[in-house]
Image: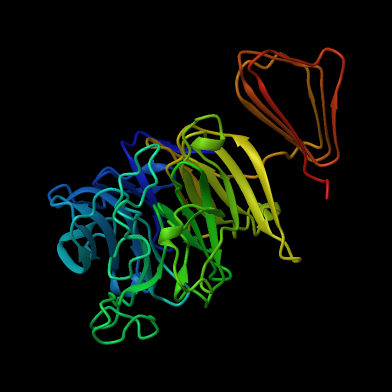
Length: 415
């Protein structure tokens, strides 16, 4: 992780307008980051309308029409998605008075979900939380919204921002008088804080925060998004959770591509998945096709890749930062990750063939080598230390870990 910028108050999203700028959602403002510097005046400030901004997305034809879309929690607790226009005389300013509300629903409390992304098909997608409180040691989904198609909550929604009624003709639940909102295309989500599309394939990846047992990442190939049921609260991860909430139709159930242990199975530690992106940049070919995601509470990061035999490689890369809140990608497909106050670029490290690590290690550190690591170091102070090499890790006389240390050794070249 390479530090790009700091000094923010509450980063919730990173977006691109397909140019050299990064747009940073910071509480109720959107700020512009250009060449590592934050533009002094916010792109837009919604403090008179919103308690916080969840996400930002730019129209695929933004260069021509100047439209961008903001999802926010309104001051009356409703969920709002609005279209705004850029200022006609200053490309670094949005026109706060140009708002057109294209979607909203009331009482957006509890789990809110939050993200907003344009897909490969040109439609605007968003996720919603199930509205539950998420209180520890409870079953969750107390309002049974996730499997209820009459509720907007716990759903995947799809909008056509260029259609008069904003509903794509391909949305599956549009029968007259069926009681199902026409924007819904999928159900069974708990708190899908961040999702993304693979810019090369159009596939969707969803990080859905679990209750107490499992955090999950869901994957659905492009062109098969309709009527998908992500399982909550019949399932939590792959585990049967509340059988009374199971759907009668199980054909459309989507089981996670991967899970990791939550509170009940990880020593009573909090866990909360932060969904990421598939790397499609040019700077680091070794990262191509890997989905990078993280856990908000532990700061652990993984690289996941779908393999040709329909299996997956899912490598834990260690504890790399505190409280990753969101990921983003720039116009070139390079990846970024943020804490509440800082933005980092994700880079491929390990350019050295061989590493020798003999000095004492007293803080959490990640070591990566293309060939081998040799070490006779002492690891101190309950540090988390990660050795990763392609061919060999050699622990020599003198290597020692104090009580409380967590040490990982990973052979990336092993098949």
